[in-house]
Image (spheres, rainbow, N blue to C red):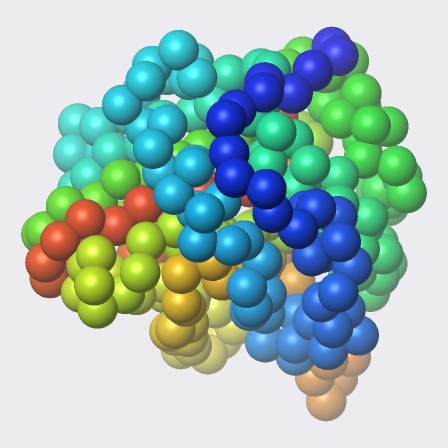
Length: 248
């Protein structure tokens, strides 16, 4: 499937690929290896955040809407974008993937998993689509006061890219309070470790989708990760989820 980006009116801004390339990728890779997550500061401008958030009421941009309470996922709702994706998201996926795929391959090698990810994002997406995973997975989440997102994993089929990104589109303290991003890590024969990741508007958190390797005293072992969002105390919170594998 060829996805042509949907054109959206927006103010002039720095090119997405330029912003991605300007990030400290050695530091991001090191944090992903040591903690399972890393903050990508100022990935989007405030104007870009507003542009994406403003799409939520217009169902023409989306393929489905999920009300979390109906499925036991928490409280709040989200919508999956349809193809063609909006420009910003269409640019983000390949730009970020170009840096994450090396980390993903190193993780799989360390965990004894045979799967390797191609350097070109288009090649990975083709792999998904040929396996019947052709529905786009980027999503826009909307939370109101009292809403939250239960701990979960975004697995949509056989082909799963092991890193994903969540971008905070709202401004903490002004648009909402509460609503922290939470990551938990289940270690073998040990209690779970929790990580709360503070984000500013336009910041992203990159994190492990399912599991990651950890070096122990007896070699490398896998830890299982889940992510969620704590209760919104007041206001409204929008988040963009960028998942690299598509869904069946």
